[in-house]
Length: 262
Image (cartoon, rainbow, N blue to C red):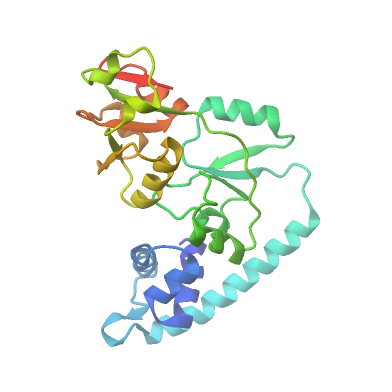
């Protein structure tokens, strides 16, 4: 039984609304519904009467009282442990696509032990911190998105720009642009740009347009893949795929039918 789900259930109980609770938790309504359903499966009985306006069942109310007691005790214990300090504490870093090269670079920069934790690209940017599973989240620059800036401010988060992320463009070897020795911005005029992430489609499109500049008449299409490993098998027709340089090099290393431009 995940304490994360217990906390989400406690928040839900204040609203008796999946929509309102999901907003406070900064997660999708469907995610919250899935988590609470999983919690009900764990305990073996219904916590919510969904046919009666999402009221708590009798067992749900009793369970909520115990869950709050458990969470309060856990939080108090964690606070006492953290006050004791730990010089060997491991910094938890949430990153979507950790690579061995990235880990090697971090070891040179960080004076403390660290470990990567899961940060699914389909989840909200700040979820690992909200859930308490990470101390730091590494993600793309979100400061041009007013709604995300507002979320970060509400959570009292500190934002630091770490580095300029090296990007690359990949395409099938059959693409006419693949014959060039290098790509110029003008070569991309009217190009079809493929976006793999349906959950963050609008955000990624905006970032790409901001990165490549205006007046290129770019076309965008959605082509979901099953995680980053899907790049090892994906085909793009005449489309172009933009991704981090190290990720593209890794997944396309053994593909002679794909051409990569930094």
